[in-house]
Image 1 (cartoon, rainbow, N blue to C red):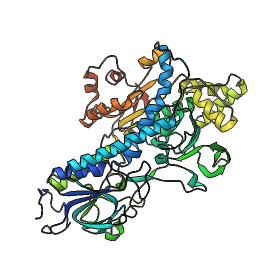
Image 2 (cartoon, one colour; image 1 turned 90 degrees about the vertical axis):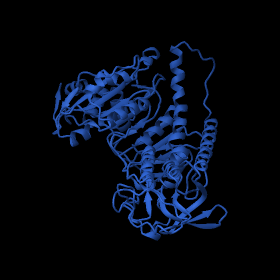
Image 3 (tube, rainbow, N blue to C red; image 1 turned 135 degrees about the vertical axis):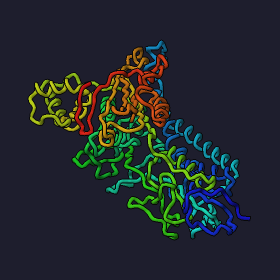
Image 4 (cartoon, rainbow, N blue to C red; image 1 turned 60 degrees about the vertical axis):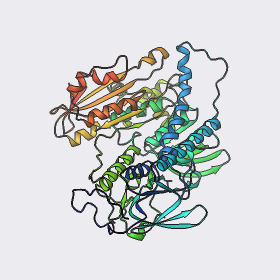
Length: 571
């Protein structure tokens, strides 16, 4: 007998997704068992729906024929990435421990293969956990390749080659996305983040192409484990789209800690050579590496799932077009998560899944809310680099001159003017030296082990976004300080915190934290911003002492006031 569910109050919300009297095998068939697909399945089943879900067979590395319950985040994204990040952070912890009274006898060694084996063991366990969660929710699980045949039929190609078709009233596509390769000669020699988490041998020399958070995080992973890392990106700084001031701090710290950054630079060709892989840049420079990773974006997974059979519309980037309720142009088909290319974050896919289930199976029309969603960039890298003691006065002058051009100062400034600007702008000398040496002189820098790079986490508007979107002046609060742990370890690493406030309403528009446990701190701040907290309420909150987080409720004096025209005034 057909199952019925509470109907939304909004007229025509469903459209025509099939005759109500037809006894379909399923109320919902989900294609893709990542975080979004699993949550939608379990929630819909909890509302009384008969649900099925289909996913490709498990593998640590995704292909057109492999996947696994849990999807990208759990199997080859957030979870395994953070496991490797924990591993990369230990080198700095070992160094810090000495000043806290710990003595280490003998060499400390690192076993990459042991780490990867444990990582694979853990994601295999999680794949099993997701299977239990789905089964416990009475969701039917099919392993194989799913394909839409018509408006209400899905065909599953099983591992053994057999295929079977299932009828369903609704179809939800949650197939996610996959990392892409640059279309350049030799691209088959490159890897993506998938392979980067499962390499058989540790790469001692790594070239990473891309400046987004995936590129930055993998640079930190490999660098923290001792690899020589070069990162190439088209923008002036990495993490385009994040708060520019915070991105500048990230760039300074990355370059100052052994990660060689190449702004405004692309890799145009890869070649197999005796020593590994040779990467050639658009400037003609060549770099040999054991691994070349492309972290240049991801593409929605929409091929080979039958969307063309029913006329589902795609965007120019190949993403499924949906409305505010995740409906496609086909009445019986919905889509959520990265395959729609809205906001590609795991918690967002889960939110979209919940909204879909509430709308379709609980009679409660619910739209995803993308305002004030927090995010974080995690990485740990090798410690600060120091200028070679043999750098001459002439070369230092050239470093300063070059840095002024790079930072959009006077192109023909005198040495004295450059030095004055350097002091006024508080430019990181390590940053300047690394850029100049790398792009102009090519001199080598020496390294000592004394520091690690903390993560960056943000929520709400960046300063640049606030200037463009808010009609009122904004107040910018910035605090830079040395974390308590560093006062004992001697690590020269500043934490930076930033708050953006609307002058007229006193509402906190955005916040950013660069420092240890940044993501843990920002998660709490996100709740405050979602609730519309004001700066006065931040100020009235009693801090927890001694913590870094208390700085967010003790910043009383604004650093600057900025008008909607971008005019900056000291407060």
